[in-house]
Length: 412
Figure 1 (tube, rainbow, N blue to C red):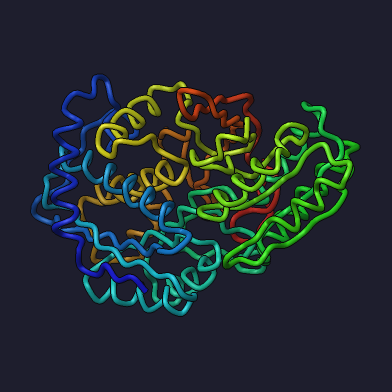
Figure 2 (cartoon, one colour):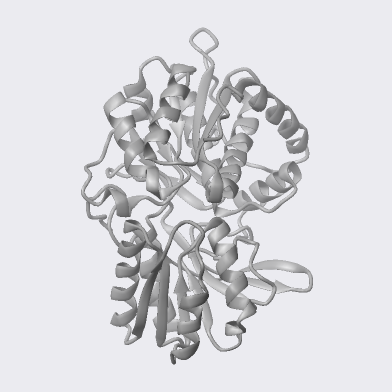
């Protein structure tokens, strides 16, 4: 385990100060603390320092974790301009072994004074952290997809989900591929995990409903994956496309091997997200995926977020950064709406579910199922060219299809 306990106060202060300097030039940016244009103030008589605990991960999830943390830091930095530099602090722990480590990390953060948690960074840990938050009555904001592992779990009043479930992404993407592209014969690849199997099941159901054919599906070892045997099999098939759901280092390895074998010349590559995450092999001409965020979204909220993030962190934001930002903002808005009161966790958890705003991903608002995932999904093409990676939004689809984020059926 890579521990980062109690780095928070110094970390948050440094990031806040840097961010404020970078944000000074943001013309026309929306105040992140007010959804309705008002300028309510945290009452100094009741205000306490709010500590946000980040339960993230190292290893193959390190890049996503850094992006989530950066997004949270930016939201806190923007908040500091309105409620003071000392009002909110960030503390963080990273885990890399198993779900039990995630619980221990969460316990250390609570012992260190965290009143609300953001995490985890890996779907594997969603159920464990959800159960910890529910039994311990600790407000938790989940910034990653997690519905597949919660299919039999009832909603918790302490847990708010900010990302659409992977099957909610895969199903509309499969329909779009079958209807809007020439892909009709597809090969499926995924990590050997329960949530991946459920995601592929949702993809297959929607893709075959359009008249498409699934030629095969394979599950790859999670640690040290070698895609060569599966890609060799793909070369022998009469497949016109492949759907691969890998993230982090595994996604980079897959993209590199896919490109090295020359498969991009005759096989279209799809994924539930953009598989390369900006690190796709230059030999892969393009990857098309469905996401709840793209840095190329042309909205005032995203332009302000993207420019501020790029100035602070010298890179474009990913979906993980946008989710981290929205998670930080949900907490900041609830803190402000509650007058800075944080002593009653139940009241604060209820305040989280009342927050609504339009962020870089689009409108965010909670639902009875404790879900505040955006309604919008975007079909995005990641293209490699001489000038680097570009992201093109091809289409917008409904993100409300499939199971709800805690085992109930989503309405509407």
